Length: 235
Length: 218
Image 1 (spheres, rainbow over the protein chains, first blue to last red):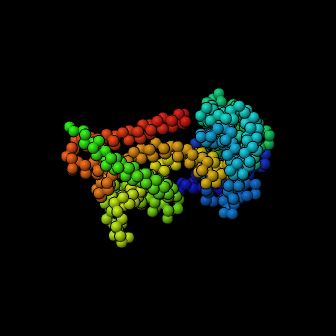
Image 2 (image 1 turned 120 degrees about the vertical axis):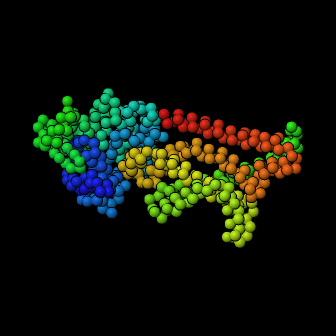
Image 3 (image 1 turned 60 degrees about the vertical axis):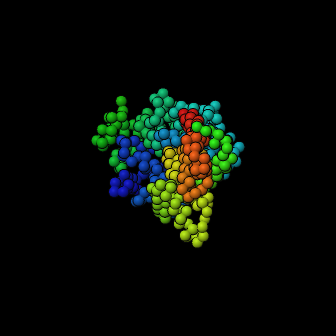
């Protein structure tokens, strides 16, 4: 698929296939279009050319119920984007109650289960302002997981975190990946990529420059641009 | 200085205050509701809603209120064929005028909520209305309270402009008493004092509310 902002082409013939259960890591410099790509996948951004098909459903088809589709695609943002006027529990139960009309008790039970899973059940009634960045991001992950999506997308989930909180979030993500979730992760955390990714994509200026499926990607990238980028971010 | 002029005419003067408060209350209610509609219109992506709403807001924000009061007083009877009376035309003028200001307060309030939260809402499958009702509006309305309270204080002060079409609100009654008693200094000082007291209450309330905003935000 391809996308333009006015005259500027931000995504150029991006072609990719992701199978169920795979974890794909997307890396690249700022402005390469990685975040835009994610937002095109769940229809938050329109695109002009090509097709995006999620589990058989075409995103750009007019007949597609985007709201329903989005319940199948979870998204975690760099700035967490929790609702500040609601507690952690309420943040998580909002979508099940309003989008799926689940009764409160059921939604809360599931939410508590997920808070347990991400490691912070005791913070259920805290407001985001009282949570650390790492905790907020874990609540955000739970908020997406509660809709039982088929795919989870992460847009630089740890980029806005203090170093000591990165691990707690990555641990949750590694856990998810090993549990069989289909994931697309935009990140610069190469340790994470090395551990769980089935494929790594390097994007630059709107195109997929190189793909790799194992450690050789890091040690011996074929494309000079990839090499240049990895030199900058790997120690 | 003969301060006795005030208790002597207090009933008459306070009767004017009743009118002042009535005018302010109607203007506030009507301006708020119409302003909310205009505010949402200003946020609409549908051009046939956006342009009229924007035109309305820019138009009334470019005119002095006193002129708008005159216009409605002279033009509305011309259009509907019969006189409207000073109180009614004042209300209509105020509502039309204040709606433009409330529209901007609404628009700014809603736009002050970071788009990221809206995206987060959409990404969990919530639609436009659910996102507005549960995520944007609760926060936006809370943010709007200080500017709304400020606008109330301004409306209260502006009611004195209805003086020019003869409405017997508080300030006009003050001037009527003055014409009879010739105690301008005492009367106008008293009038100023009354406005001061009520506006101060409003300003203090607004400041308290702002402080509470900051506490909730962190």
